[in-house]
Image (cartoon, rainbow, N blue to C red):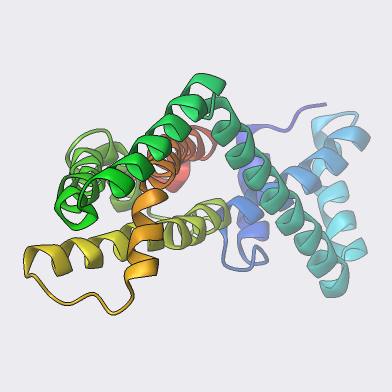
Length: 228
């Protein structure tokens, strides 16, 4: 038998005290308790007894164990989602074009002055980042600003985001060296980074799409965690 809205809210209020910081973990704990009650409830009058019963049965250690299980489940789910989204973007044509561009960059290095060619290639990545920040990326930024409850799933996505923007920061530093004509300390690293730039651009574009789509999916899954 399904709980009424009022009954569900009572369980939710109880779980909010045990949700341990993350709203999506709290929701999962609430679902665990409501499922327990619904599976045993024959009439609406049974709710109070079953609610007190599960609160008695679930001591602090058991609740902590359930929370740990829910945390692992949420982490695995969001990581799997990121992986699926990434592989959906990285199609064979995109990969083939990327490696063709790498071959072109190597050819330019062997036949032209790598320093003269570098400026145009390096700045491509910065243009893509500007497109992201002022284009579709606004959806993700709006999502972050509207968040009124802390979500474990958003924290995981945010951690990946910080890691995956490190190459962009690295290339930005190289770009600044070119603009201000600073001496490059290691020409080999500079040349290698130029060869890998098409691959970095591909991964950057892939992550931008994955990041935005995942942010919007989290909002759909937990609408009450965001401002209306």
